[in-house]
Length: 248
Ligand code: SAH
Image 1 (tube, rainbow, N blue to C red):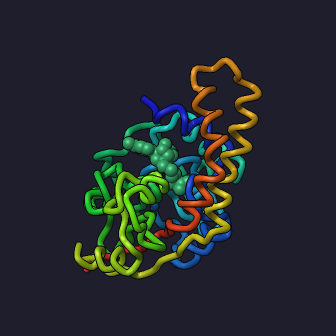
Image 2 (image 1 turned 120 degrees about the vertical axis):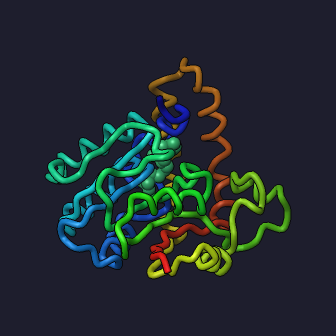
């Protein structure tokens, strides 16, 4: 079981697989006023940077579930590197339907809400692992500017304009699900650049090392087209943030 191999290639050098910088991730951890020993569940935990740095900085304990074998291995190594391997556990597997044995103070899905079939389904899934008065974290894109055509949405790698909302509507949609938005940290263009542009050097080096790979043609095509596509579309039209929610 694994995610499509292309992501394990293009994001192999990423520690954070979303448009947050390390500073934003730290800002979010501080904003949540995490208590030492609090349990954090992270579905789609990637390379584990959130759980590992929050364990180091705030003394939380946590469980992360991710379907990428590579990212999960990297998460375990990072936990050892930061000296928190006794407090955070990373499980390789499908997080769809995952419910923790022990209820968490914080249950997160940051940049992987397809795991629950969209934002509403993911909130419902996370709520099953959450103790009362716990916080749900959802990392999700929103439109900075509404695309004028469906082609622009496709340029942002969305299926359609209706995939995402504008920020005010996204915030209101959490209210419609009977959740208070109690905090939010939003990514900036700098963070988007770190997330997207970091893939380009990774692709370039991977191509040099793997010229005859089955995916070499695809990776070559992406490396050629991505800088312009990203600058024309994603960078101009898409925002991204992590929203902290508490049930009303
Ligand atoms: N939250 C992490 C990773 C976000 S990228 C971070 O912000 O750094 C999306 C992640 O979802 C990837 O790590 C991918 O491997 C994982 N993923 C995709 N489908 C999944 C599934 N069904 N179950 C668990 N993880 C999944």
